[in-house]
Amino acid sequence: MIPLAVMRDGSKGRVAAIAGGRGAHRNLEDLGIVVGKEVRVLRNSGGAVLVAVNGTRLVVGRGLAMKVMVNVEQKN
Image (cartoon, rainbow, N blue to C red; front, side, top):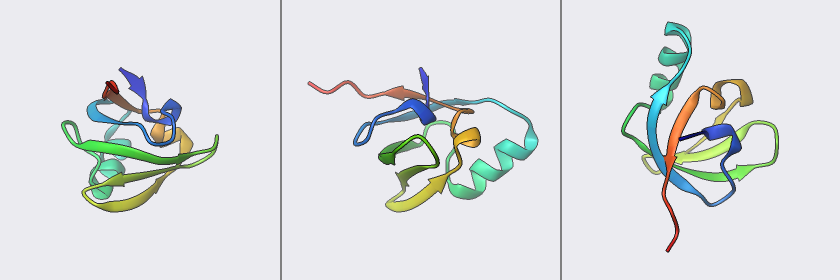
């Protein structure tokens, strides 16, 4: 498991856990980022992270992205 904020461009995985309080959970839930959901990183250049969730592109701030723990899919 690694934070969403450190995933590389083009990588994808499944949300395994979300750290933080109710506010962080609520904000992420409003974006559709919940435990079990697949996420794909479109761009991660050190600031906010551009991700795809449910076919929608979203920008997640770096602090919030550090709270999203992801099981990354291994490329074969």
